[in-house]
Amino acid sequence: MTNLSNLLDTDPVVATAGTDMLADSIEQQGAAVSRADWQPPRAAAPALASLVADGRMPEANATAIERMLAVRPQLVDVQVARDVFAGMTDRTFLHAGPPLTWERASGPMRGAIIGAMLYEGLANDPDDAAAKAAAGEVELSPCHHHGAVGPMAGVTSPSMPVAVVADGAGDGISYSTLNEGLGKVLRYGAFAPEVIERLQWMDQVLGPVLGAVLRHRGPIDLQSLIAQALQMGDDGHNRNRAVTSLFLREIGAALVDGADAPTDQRLDVFTFIDGNDHFMLNLVMAAGKLGSDAAAGVPASSLVTVMARNGTDFGVRLSGTGDQWFTAPAPPVDGLYLGAFTEADASPDIGDSTITETVGLGGFAMAAAPAIVGFVGGTAAGAVRRTQAMYEITLAEHHAYQIPMLEFRGTPTGIDAARVVRTGVLPQINTGVAGKVPGTGMVGAGLVEAPIECFVDGINALAATVE
Image 1 (cartoon, helix red, strand yellow):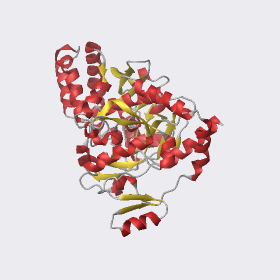
Image 2 (cartoon, one colour):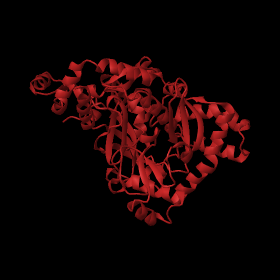
Image 3 (cartoon, one colour):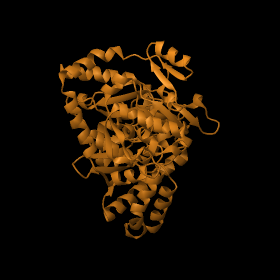
Image 4 (cartoon, helix red, strand yellow):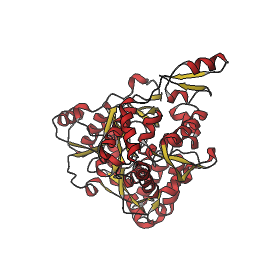
């Protein structure tokens, strides 16, 4: 079967699906043809028919997407995880993706749990941490179950500073950890001493200083920063250079002379953010989580409110089916690799960062960020075609997030699981790649498609709710 991800990065050809008669005729006329052995997913055909016959889905989807687009995410504070997550104990660790146990955890997920245990002082060394985790001495819970998101492994432990993002147009709140940078970092499963030292600096300096800055200057309008950054070559997922620069400009005055924090600490924070082009990723994710949560819980709606991976499973949730997860095996990533690393070193897809695609950013906004192909692969023309393909499976165009390359058309926003199942067009995602061996860290970045099985199962379950 032809892979849409590969097709989008080739020179224009005629794509055919189903029987070979049309393809044969076109080839006889000298044109290039890409054949797709495609047919509608039969398992969901009756479900789609019942949803269409019921008649409530269009109105429900209109309500859900309206709620998603209405949020105005603002960064309002930075606090300590144990102080914002209800019921969090000293041994509660949040993680990316659907629910998971240690026994089923991928290499980078295990590495991040080990690192977090060392950081929290719950283990003496990596072997001790692994043994205690295997014995059930830490409680694992998905970030998404707590209004939060975490990139890659997404592990959030009690002492970590977390960003607090609030809806300026409503009462929603979401959370994310702060970004460590690239390379050997906890979220990619690394746990070397320098990783732990950086985390300790983040909870002792970075978090408190940013909290002081926000209390001095007030909330930061994240939607405005993201919208501007799309005009400057970012996509909001794997290219955040512009939005990080805009963020640093926003906090600059307070960081220089307004925040109630020691001068040397304020300088260290400025230097850290200035040297970390991915700093805003986590905050963009929290902004996305705010929008997806606002759209959740609309009966009969096929809007996708969550796409997330944990290195073992890829999971989605739909507005009309509430908190239920629909999962499939996490797929491999078609990546560009760092140094001597190859695909043999790579973990399957991992992280909550697909929340960006869920709200019209990342792979859905790659047409705004042609330079991203140097990081994740593909071609600039392919990046544009990926975005254009996503209009086929989404419910709206974002009013604030616009793409200059497409005459300032709004990004395709609000994945409709019914359209995914009906068309076979899969959500396009750009992502980092973690090493499959615990402790390795980042090995590359690349492109991946969401598995259709998740959407088929979701549509079947949604149809059952309207019968």
